[in-house]
Image (tube, rainbow, N blue to C red; front, side):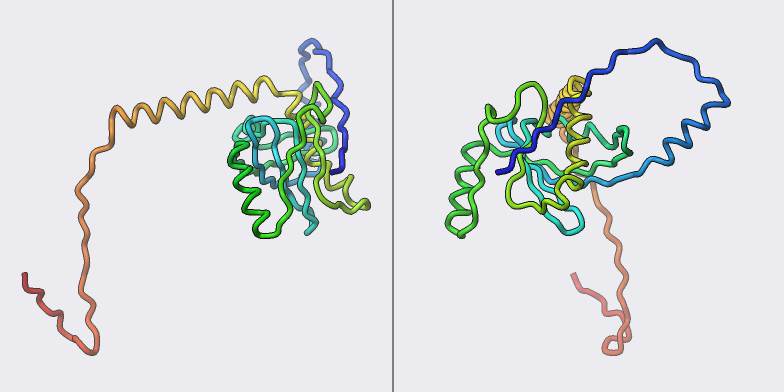
Length: 212
């Protein structure tokens, strides 16, 4: 397992709010339009809400990495983000597993002759910020460029972690409220009207009357 430490993003001191002249607004819009835009497709499995196994592919080169973050905080909370190098749209699927389900999964993998999933201990990651460890082989000529999307996502996650966790909690609260409402007010079955018309064919040129 290859460990690639990502340095934490430097903190930025807040600056007083400034009024931008109207004639300068188009300049900032043009600069934003010139930034490169990237698509980041991730498939994630979160284990016990501690470590996430992230999978992605770049031009046919598959990657997977372990991240010391719960990507449930990312799912549904980040649709797109921007950094100094460009803009990125995020598309991500997230599933959750436990230590018990991982043991059963590894038993199936072992029986089929596939490599086991071995989660790194949380203590093996740097403390204080999100980082990742690549699992499996990677092409040294491309790995740095192919991991930039994940690194940008982790930097954005760390910078907005509290807000993302709050948004996730709000989504969970709303989900539970909807489920409780449906339990208290179950939808009533509605009558359904089905209409059909007989189709004439060469064998039965005249519609046959169906006797009750």
